[in-house]
Each structure stands twice: as C-alpha cells, then as structure tokens.
Image 1 (cartoon, rainbow, N blue to C red):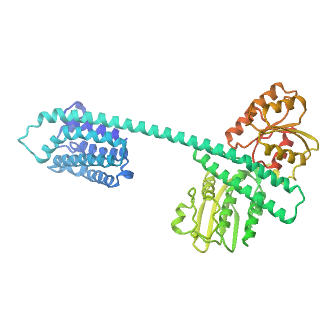
Image 2: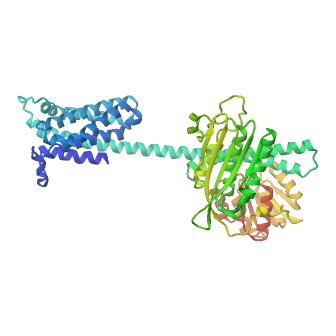
Image 3: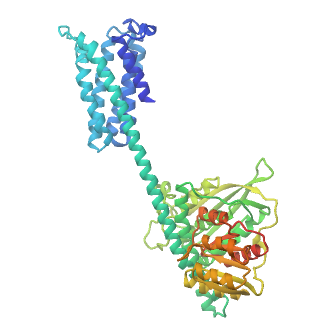
Length: 562
C-alpha cells in the first residue's frame, strides 16, 4: 500500500516539471496549496515503505525512529507551508533530508545482513546522482547554475528508474518471503513426520508395558506387588500423557488438531481425574478436594478426553509445586441465554510455592518451568501448562493464572458445552467381558504385542490365534473361521490395507469385522482406516476395556467410529 502511495506521489511530482494531464493543471500553480503537497506525500510514503521493506523496527530501531520523525514532521508541514513564502524551499529540504535518511537506513540494514538492503542500497546511488543536484540548487538558491535542462530531463528519468527499481525490490522481497514460507512449511512437515515416527516407535513398547500391568492385575498379588503394579500403571500413563502433549503441540501449530464431540457425564470425568492424581497427593500428604462437579447432572456434549487432559495437567502441576496443604478443583455452572447450552468454569487452586510476578507472562510457553528452587523434583518437560493453555483456547476458553509467591497459585478457565439428549455415557456401563469362545485373529509384527494380546484376550474368554505378518494372516483366514480380526496396519511383508483388501475380495468370510489396532494416532490415519473398510480403529497403547467394547460392537454389527 505504501509503495502504491509513493508511486502516485512521485507521478504527481514528475508532473510538476513535465505536465502530462491537463485535468490536474492546478498542481502547476505555485500559489496553490497543492503545489508542494505531492513532494511531502512522496517523502512520507518513501519513509513508510522503507520501514516496511527493511523491517527497521526489528533490525534498525534507531533509523526506524528517524524515519517516523520525518513522517510526523511532514504531516503538519502539509497544512501550513502552502501559506509560507519559502514553502517550496522547506518541502525540497525535507525531501532531501528524507533521501539522506533513507540512504543511511539502507546502509544500516545492509550491515545487519539484510538481503533486501543490498538492492535497496544500490537504488540511492542513482537517486543521489539524478535527483540530489537539483535539490541542492533549489535549497541553497544557487542562481548562477543552469539546472533547467537537468531538472526537466534528468529528474523525471531518475524518478522513473527509482520507481522501477523499488518495484523490483518489492518483487524480490515477495520471492524471498515465498521461499521462507516454503522452507518453513517443509520444516514443519519434517517435524510432524519425525514426531509421528517417534510417537509410533514409543507407543509400541509402551503398549507392552501397559499390557503387562493389566496382566499382573489378573494374577494373585501381595499388597507390595499390587503397589508396584499401581506405580507401573501410573508411570505408563504419565509417559503416554507426555507423548500426547508433544504431539498435540505439533498438531495445534499445524492447525491439524481435531476435537471430538461426544456425550459424557462430568462426574465420571472428574472421578477419573481424581483417581489419576489421588495417589501422588497421598504420597505427599496433601489434601485433594473436588467441589461442585456432582451438581452438574446433565449429559454434556464435548471433548471429554481433552477436558480430562487439561484438568490432569493442571492438577499434576499443582501437585508438583505444593509441599504442604491442599489442592482444590472446583466446577461452577454459569447461566446462558440458550437452554440447550451451559458454561462451566473450572479452577485448580493450591497452597504451593507460588509463581513470581515476572514469570507469569511466560508460564504458558512451551518447555518453560517456573521453578524457583532446586530442591523440588524435576519431573516434567514444561509442556503441561503450555498444552493446557492451547487446548483451552481450542475449546473456546482462556486459561488464566493468579499467583503469590509463598501462598499458592490459582489456574482457572471457562468453557461452553451443549447439553446432549442421550443416554448416560458408556462409562456407566459395567466392565466389559468378551463372549466365551469368541474366535479372534490378532495380527501384529511385534512379539510382545502378540504375546500380551494373546494373554489378555484369552483371559477374557477369547480363542486367539496370532500372526506376525500379512501372509501368515491370510493362511489363517483361509484355514480357520474367525469372529473378528485385530489388524496392525504396519506389517513387514504387506501392510494392513492390503490384508484388508484381500479379506474383502477373497476371504471365505469377506464381511468379517476388522479392527485397526495401530500405534499411529493421527486423525488422517484413523480416517484412512475407516475409509478403507475397517470396522473400527483403536490406537496403542490400547485401553483393553475399550477394545473389548469395540469388539462387542463390531461383532454385533454396530460399527464404531473409533
């Protein structure tokens, strides 16, 4: 915009000495207030364009202020110099000062390594050569110099070259910005691919750890062993949350985070959050209090998992930095004009060490911890508050904090929900149990996943066969009848989609339910599985109760969306 304004202003300045358009001949009248206005406009627009082109505010702040001062000086002069006898001299002087300031700014920007400044710097050699001599004559009133021919010929040529080169520089800047955007997009894609790969590789052994804990629960345990199993489960849950936080940050930055809208009971969510954090609170001798959630009896429609993630992160943060006292999680209802909606405010208040005022502005930054002392446990990587803040924003609220050093902290936010006119959520249902004798084919290339899957599914009443690759799975399907197939999509010989295609086209039972069971967690992979014909989708590490529920649904031909 500033470049367009400068081009128009320079065209009017050129028109003063080389009339082209008779319709604006009033600009030729030296007694007209408009006679010198184009020169001021050209000076101001050139300064503004230079600020934007060279990003002087970030790279050369002193010159940025200099150019701003010229702009602010020219503005009032436009209003008054039309009535001043020496107004033309003042206007030419300001134009000359602006030219020198722009030249100085280009040198300063060149020293910072600004690539655009190289081109911009070269322009002013032409400007100073073609324009400055006549400006000096006009300013110092050197009457014995005959500059008429130079003023009529050289200055318009200088103006045209100047405008042409400015346009070229602007195009070069656009090209560099486009390249930078492409590099950024490529870097983001590489980061996303790296995180997805790391996530897949980490979730595979984590699935084994989680499954081992579940299997141990099914055996007779001494009290001490039961405590170890509890700690094992809590550790695996903590690791799963950390991986989820890292992936969620990447998804939010790439605008690929998908929110789920499903019915749930708030009391059940709060009970789960309570159970996840109670053991840590008891170990530290802290009082963990939940208030107000039982008053919300409606079935809500929203992202239950994200809400659980936010509250768990906030409570884990409070537990980490509270040495004595209590932690209180409060839920409060707020009236809304629409009866099918409600707003709920959530707060987590602790009596911990508190946060210094100067650190509050960065408390929600990634990989930042506001820990003032060295004797507190260094668990966590500084993502809990960052991901919580971003998730709250995605859900339609704002996470805020109030804190006093030595007295504790208070995190709070408010979210909108719809009231779902459905039955109570599945969490009210009793623990799932597979039908005795159900025939299951488990296809997975990881030995531990096959071993643990076999043990868990068999313990729940299933007759299980396991296959380590796609070809083995096809042989089993040709020789045996199964009620359901649990299929990993990453196999060494043929991927799960090829196996699925063979099942649908050549299997003796082409309609057999197939559940994708994979360490991939992205929405794209989930959608790809469902679009290919999978009956459902569940990522590892898997919730075996959830898997049991999905198996029952698909066997009963109630396809699940995953």
